[in-house]
Image 1 (spheres, rainbow, N blue to C red):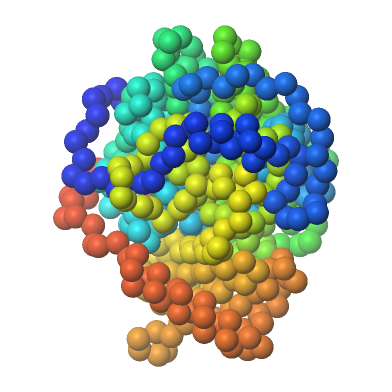
Image 2: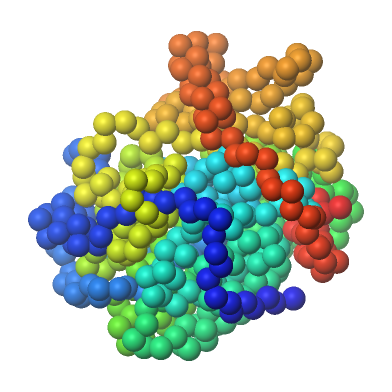
Length: 508
Ligand SMILES: [Zn+2]
């Protein structure tokens, strides 16, 4: 089931070039006091604390990107959650930078990961579609290719049935280990083994993608009952594993008791804790290697999870509420970034690739070109930005099998939800018939007053709705990717279909 590729750099039909700034600019800003320690970017919050002596940064640092699939920021104690689900990530945040308000570009893996690696939002890179046609185009310039072109060894150890080399997710990686399923400890060990093979004189860029936090939520045996002694008796888990009801029913229709929702939430939280322990051990092992202390580590997720909020249970991809699009983003970069900095200004997941490129001193693209995202380092340095970073997102396309979704009204691509977020305001548009063409059912939320998105205030704020709906229309008009090439259907193996189905995806 594993795929390993070791191949020369492919020729690209076109390059999407991005602005990059050399790392010296960052170092210079820190040296000038731009990277203050222990402070938030909102005035008056946070207090400075003494700086630990930082190691001199290497010219070409090793860089580890950790993507914890399906990890909602709201379930991390570093983001204010009331359970200690991730003490290691909290510790990393205290020694690095935490972005408090990050919007993913899509609530499903295939699109969101493509955005993480390109800085393009989903409508722009165009990843979506049926299981037999979904591809990440090799025409797009990726963060991995930027590192590879800078002389880095590039290693991917990836777990998720969508992220195959065949679909294009290996681009830029000299070594790419993909599996559709598997647990974090084994995958982390493989990563450590692969990175040990990299010559000492060569820097590396590595991507570790783990899926233990995705349903069926796979905590270690030791953590299984840590937050709730009855977690292993979760009815949702029972439904998922034994399939007494259809996935469709489980996601949209079945009415779980409050007790079972709490129990399953504990299971999800325990899975986060188990991954946190693996990350602690893995990152600790890498830091203990010669030269490892200056390593840059970036932690994020592709999307969150709905635990029966807004009528969707144990899933994602079908809606755009904050439990699905608010993702974590923590960066630790000794000597390059301050410690204990929390950036409250809203940013987007599409800002991650430009940020990591700038921080690492690699060039994401050529001169004169741009991307949808932009480096967030100015916010870390406390520089004011004239315009807010407006976030857009679009829900998933795999809908035909999910006939019981009560909030999908229009068949096909035209039925996908869209959202635009501009500071405190968030507009969700749900295409709805019987109008032809379909009109949008609109929901407006004031996230400052109502972070749980419980009250649609669209009718009370028509001017805000008009402004955001206009921005959304412009986004669709300017960003919609051209139809994909006439590529032949993928040869999806029976094993791949089985892996997709085992995670609840329509794979027919
Ligand atoms: Zn995912």
